[in-house]
Image 1 (cartoon, rainbow, N blue to C red):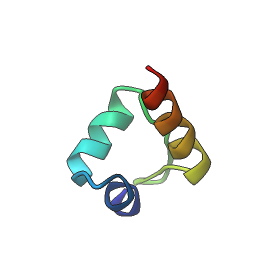
Image 2 (cartoon, rainbow, N blue to C red; image 1 turned 120 degrees about the vertical axis):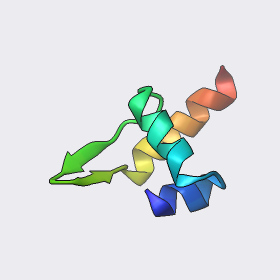
Image 3 (cartoon, one colour; image 1 turned 45 degrees about the vertical axis):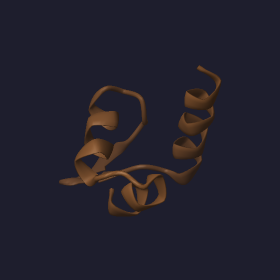
Image 4 (cartoon, rainbow, N blue to C red; image 1 turned 90 degrees about the vertical axis):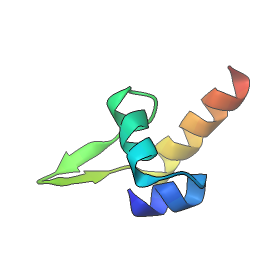
Length: 50
C-alpha cells in the first residue's frame, strides 16, 4: 500500500479507501493487502477516461 500511495502521491488511507470502494482491485495475503501494478495502472486509465 505504501508504494501505491507514493506512486499516486496520496496518503495510505486514501489508497485503502480506493480499495474499499472497489475503484482499485486488491487481494489479501494473510493480513497484507496487495495491489498489482497492472491493476493500478488500469484503474488510473479508467479514472482518466471517466
